[in-house]
Image (tube, rainbow, N blue to C red; front, side):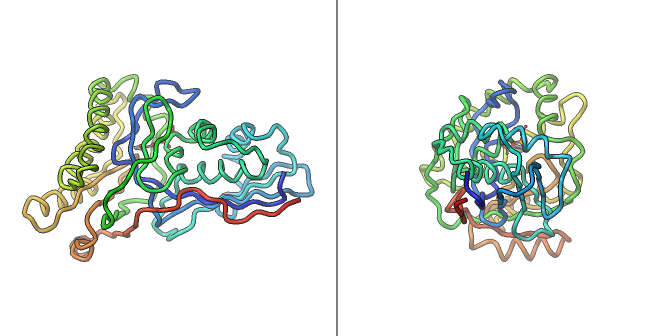
Length: 318
Ligand code: 2P0
């Protein structure tokens, strides 16, 4: 065991979405998903050996008893003895945007624990553990464009563009009414279009790679925007209905779509388990889009694609 290790991991935004587990214990998804790791927010985890015999978990500077059991259970994949272990997790970057992320959090925790407890698990093994903390966390282990395959494994994809930026518009930073784990289980059981969604996801993942490799951003954007909207339709056709997008989200989606149709700029949207809208475009458009959004009362924060992935930034021996 080391005396202190600090690790970091980026957030990731799925362009082809994960929404449903075929194995809830091992966390194997029904469909492949593809994401971009972003450099605007990240999670940082510090694990320290203390002199007391307690296990302690701090989130953003405050001791957190609510999540402590889940963190402990996750760390049991690395060690049975967690007495005298202190875990501090924080989200770095512009905190006002309220993008706390379980994906970057569990990826940072996994790589930091791997080094702290000196397990030396390879990426493949680490990935099988990371996805048990949070499915989408597996994709935050790697930089750039990342695929989580439907057999549960992880692949690094090439990303041939160097001028794509992702804008995040925060519609609300309140805690979501229904968490993703419960919501996707409800969709699997009840959504009227769940089987169609699985079939379409496989087609979308293949097409994504095809358009990406051809560097055809227009077809890629149309594809991933439709994939996100279909995921939200799956949610809205679940019983009880899962409504993540608000009228304000839909207004912003229409604003981007209409500007695209009018040829003002080429940008596409994607939305996750909440009302916020992410805008994907080429670098040359970001000033025009920012001005339009601000004039309509929306905010936007632009991110680059992360090029490093999860990493250890500090360690000291006992
Ligand atoms: C994704 N989301 O692919 C999809 C799109 C939200 C919408 O993965 O139950 O926190 O821990 O595996 O990964 C959010 O769900 O859920 C998510 P669990 P997770 O990014």
